[in-house]
Image 1 (tube, rainbow, N blue to C red):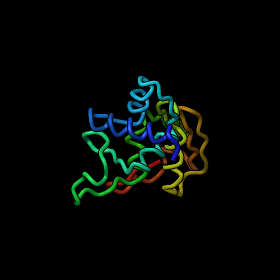
Image 2 (cartoon, rainbow, N blue to C red):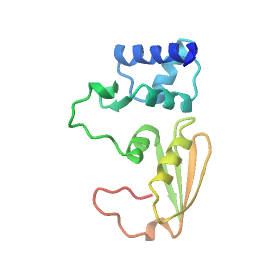
Image 3 (cartoon, rainbow, N blue to C red):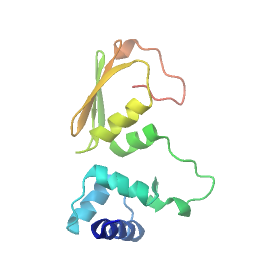
Length: 148
């Protein structure tokens, strides 16, 4: 591991233990204030390598969590982390995210493999989902499920 990466990991650990960091964008801004410029993709990899998980109290080491805490499903985690707004129109959904949030959200939605989705295009802070039929005509989702 390079010295810059080691230093960045140390700063991430210092920040999450010193204060509540609610999401990756907030963590990225705190690192930027310390003159550490990091992309969302790099930050996401760092969090995985450090085995940090998002909790209601902010990011914590996975080893510090109680045993009964179940991991958050990738789609649920991506939605809570990145989704800002959603706008349906006929067979199209436009999902708004913070800057650099569209790609990880698109990957999580694609990974869920919804059969009614025909395609996806993701930019920097938005993504579009094309449905095989009009969104309003789809059958209601089962209780406890998410429909895209």
